[in-house]
Image (cartoon, rainbow, N blue to C red; front, side, top):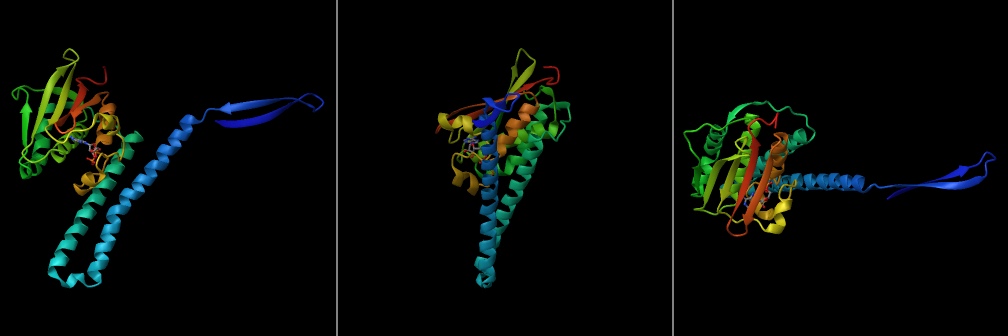
Length: 265
Ligand code: ADP
């Protein structure tokens, strides 16, 4: 609570009372803390790859570059860490744009099936490497048209499918399904995996910026901890919703609820 006290004088200037104002600044403090945490997180996330790039380049300059084996190995690390830095900055800019509502959705007719096909092309190599089967569980001959921003919608599906691949061990399975929702006025698009799953107690937090259940695992696989925060903001901009159900050790299912016409619904 923020307290301010002021005297109340009578016409002769004598104090006849005081006014005490109590300001409830809980929300302000909360916002301040969120902002401070965010800055600390960003700094830390940027520092980690930079420290590694600096350290390995110094080691190379100090002589390690004369060993071809070291040269190749260290340059590879530097490249991977620069990629991560690049991804992190891109995700941060993306998120800050979304949060400041500095972007306008480009509403157009989008066929959900086409978007899923595009995403599958992008993740094909990664899924193959892990021998993960991705199955489309819906009528492929049908069109599933909604009004949406096609690029942003693709980003949402891409983030969910990339996570499903990321957090599913080799030989696992991912199922993408489309079902009618809201008496035919919307669709539920689900991405389900047979992966490591998420503890019930962690579920409410995974959409927070930088929240990762296993930091080391996410980092070593190139995660930025921003993917789900971006999805949540984008689905909300589409007036939709995201829900997740999961069982630790068995798998997760992320459901996107989308209106066919978000501007009127
Ligand atoms: P990251 O870049 O770490 O993947 P995200 O914001 O995409 O960041 O996800 C936040 C965290 O939620 C992840 O670090 C992971 O712990 C958890 N998570 C996300 N998707 C899945 C999934 N399909 N299975 C298990 N855990 C997941």
